[in-house]
Image 1 (cartoon, rainbow, N blue to C red):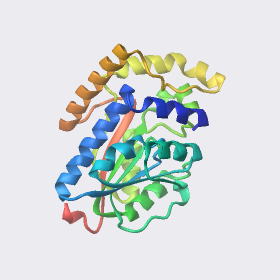
Image 2 (cartoon, rainbow, N blue to C red):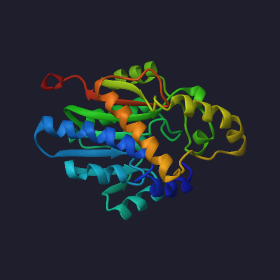
Image 3 (tube, rainbow, N blue to C red):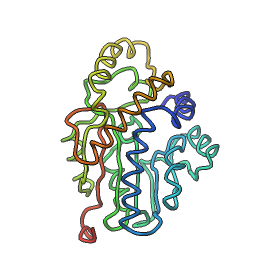
Image 4 (cartoon, rainbow, N blue to C red):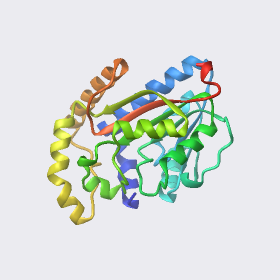
Length: 253
């Protein structure tokens, strides 16, 4: 990701409708997992960015983050998050040491050589029946200047992610599109600026709108999160996934 984007992310994450809606969805799933296990969780945020999710997950247990960017780690420390500089391509973690691993908008990055191999490392590090939470960009035809700015390797489709989860030894509990209620608006915006943005070198979509617009968009995302508690969405600009470590120990669920 372009280094300047970390500052933009740090300044937007606490209030921007997109981040707040996503973080609330993740927290709902991880909180449910804590209730299921009946104890504090050990959580890893892999590709933790500027540390906002680590900060939000902290009340649920012991949380640590890893990220390859020194800028990201500096911002994590400003938030008081425990984070280390690590490359996911060569990440070695203690086997069966985490209850939950979150990896949010990371696996599609050009710096990730093999998403399957990274997920295999996550599987090794998860305890039997452990939970993996992913969010990824969706639908290649939505590629725009934002993807240039954040160094997107590919935008995912449901069958692609499903097959790669299986190859890595995971069983998907929920695999759905996200940001679907706003999809017509987002798709139109992306298509209109896509070619121009790629020619100019890329500029991300992360910009805080006016308070009124931000509040309205957040209400839409919260309504969508309520829908996702009961089912899935057929289309959207992101894919959201909750998966379990398969194989030995799956019967413990």
